[in-house]
Image (cartoon, rainbow, N blue to C red; front, side):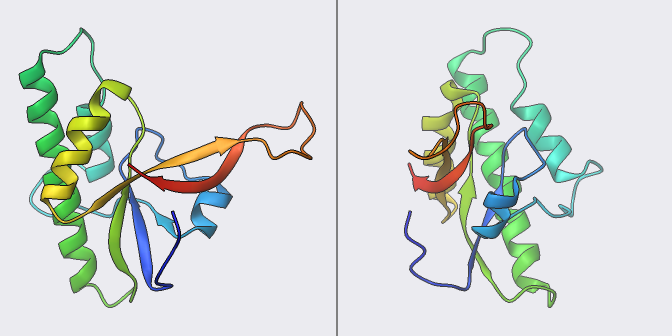
Length: 139
């Protein structure tokens, strides 16, 4: 993903709530407090992305829609905030993989562009070095 505009940020909608240094340097931000719920939005998203049993298509659809609504509320709260003048335009998603198509569609319906983090090694990296974020890819 090319960052066409320097004043754009990426909201984190993953179960992994701790962003890497590279992801933060690429303007990814944690999911901020979601008004209208007793739970922190990151806890709600983590719960919605966790399945004890194989989900039905309806569960996938319902949870994808709910996560996208949480993201839209976070974007709205972010836009009203004076703390950060960047626009939230992108949403970082990852696993579970069976959620990605539905979640991507629902995020687009909310006006957000879904991205995934391309994680890997660069050619000159030592094999034992941990994998790291290289760039965001729009899905």
